[in-house]
Image: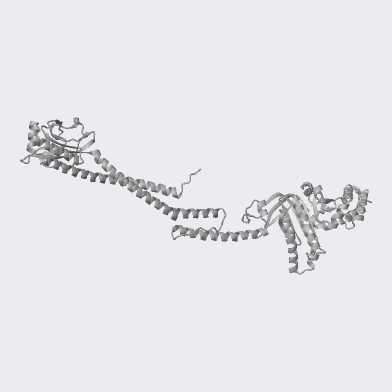
Length: 565
């Protein structure tokens, strides 16, 4: 997983890098400057101390003490003065030496305090190695002047010593010895480090406070507005068009937010236009057509696109439509047709039906769902229209009736037309069957006719629906024969009751007819008509049986399919 490295983290990292660089550079420069300054302070203090100590030493007595190695009262007084100077000044050692050869010096005075180890005190007459490479003693003796800068002389338990030498002058102004003032370099460095540490601490505190203040400003003025803008962009990417980002201030972020708001608003308006346009397209070309053709929108449709699929087909027509139209003006005719569609189409769509085509007095629809939905929607529409007809809410109620044809099978759905105008088209034997069934339904006083193939797709068809076998139909293009049924659940109550009463005898007659037992079939249909004189299907069969039963020699050549399509 890729780690997220946001603006705040980047800002903190950049600030820390610059803080480290600035602190390191400031520390280095400060340390160098402090070293020079503090070293100069220690050096000036050491020069003053050396001059002060030298002023307490009598040069003539100094030579005498060096020669006799004998102390007197004056020596003790001088020694006490030197010790007092050491106690009051920030130095490590104060001592007085006389050079007695090129390699040795002689201790004349040395100082100590209560913490000084006895074995480290230079006694009168004590000898100390002399290294001519250290020029401080020689310069003080030759010039008769105090050194103007430190000389690093030796390493002791205190570390490196920085030493200033002042000449001890006799009464004639001649330098007869030197007073050495030692300052521990560790003390100098410690002082420098303390000063630099204190300064850097204050600097880091100031930098930290500035960083926190700057972080608040950046968070408020930059990161938060950017995050809000990012969330708005994310919402728009997720489909929430028209989202608006809050605009505060008059900086670059606010300007970007204003531009984003204009863009979001314009996109929302354009998408509403496109959605409206698509919705308009879908009224002419159903969305389900795109899905079957595996297209996402109308712009992907090409002339010649097709797909073979299995569908359930429903065709509907208004019976006697031509006679009804002859009696109506154009305006009233369209109002009448649209009234019928407004009452019938919702019931089709509610069950998953898709209106494929409207034509005069009817429409065709296809279903990708179960065939049971097709039959249920046809029954619901018939029952609803019967109720309206009974209540007198339909024009031409006396002559009004509907007819439905239902089939099921493989269908070729494709795009036909030319480069200037496309249309979707369904091509199949099943389309022909459903169209044919709805045109002959009135002939058998039926509202819903369904093929045997479609009926086989419905679980529990025999038990759940009121129906009767009407006979066989013949498909001329394929030579195929198929049963078809009259489903009368949507018929008016009187027709439904009579069909149910005569069902057994009617279907017995149909089966005898199919077995070419025309005389026996004739007797069955006569029985049906005695009970149900308006049974057009029984009339049709009786008419055929009257023709066929006397043709016993040619019985096998008689066409038992009562319909051809």
